[in-house]
Length: 158
Image 1 (cartoon, rainbow, N blue to C red):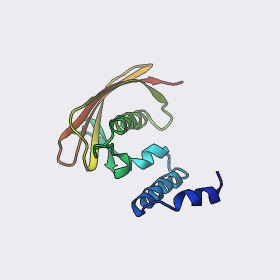
Image 2: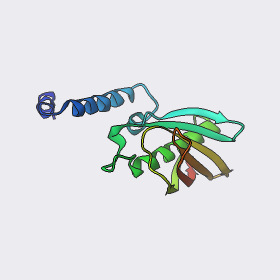
Image 3: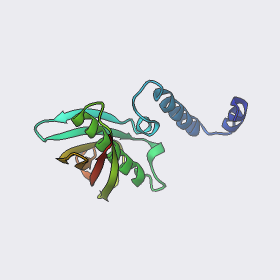
Image 4: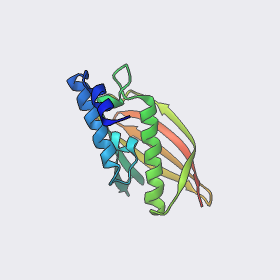
């Protein structure tokens, strides 16, 4: 694809669609300087650190129109991606920047729709072994309504 072809594709977009394309391009550009992947940039993913009182790692994401499904709620796959990303970030925060681990399994329970605003993930490390790390995550919205819960096992890479 050339820039000229892309310009032609953009000609008949609505103003809302142009704004969406702009968000996508900005997220793509941020990945040049950010340690986050493109999808994390699209979610406005943020690591907020460790809450010692609750013994959880905190992360958040923002629900945008681009992340909604046809029913105008956060797409379930994006919710699962947010949880998986929060768990992966937890591994790095708990083990250090050199830690490498991948998801072995992820079990998500969708409890309520994510409708608007910021979602917060609270991730607890349940067990750290030589080869696996088991975690649990709770996702709430700005009203502290429980949106989803999840459990996962991550495999440590050497």
